[in-house]
Image (cartoon, rainbow, N blue to C red):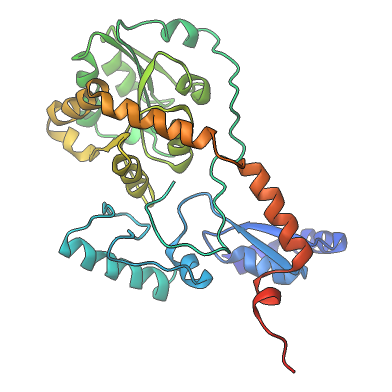
Length: 331
């Protein structure tokens, strides 16, 4: 696929070559950027990660991955305190990831990996316009926000799951619920319509909703951006993971005391278990306390994400990459 892309865009590559770039930033999910670096003749290459550090990249960078407590990034639900059989499965997943191809748990790290989570997220919000402004004022005890991001379309979620999810919302009349129901999901709209403490929408200004003082919890798919946005404003979460890193992301919040990971398939059989999780997040003060502490830790970091990115980029540009620093020249 990468080779086909480069072949298709030969003219664009020739245009880029003329600029003689000093540095290239590429996503670390695959090796296409590494090939692009070579084609363009760029000496310095920085990997950018929009998700947890992938295991094959950790292996290449020499970053230790103790499989007894560092979960592999994949479609399985393992925390940093796995059982015997979960550790065995973690090893199998790791072997497949590294040798066949392809905010985090505590793990050893090296100086060639720099965390810049939250890059581009602004501290100041713009305030809510209607109808969101009015909706956020409803609910005697506050508001709960539900959104599964842009990839998990609610139209594809089973009827029973949506029905039982909305029934759980209905069971908490002192809270008002805002739910993202995707365009074309007539089934979801129909189920939500008779529930008086539920308002649906196809799009919403998520950062402004998350930072609103009346928001009490966020029900999310567990994407990395949503995790970071929630952490920065101190909002407890319930994670509904769908694929890849989302199980891991939800478990990170759970481990640190400000989130719960819930298996969405349980909603096929009723709303009770989900309702119990929702009540825990809303009624046990410890979740909000841990979320608030996480917010303070992030906002009071000595260096911002953009500062770190700029400084380390300048450092590498001036001094060369790891090869030029770590290797002793031959006599």
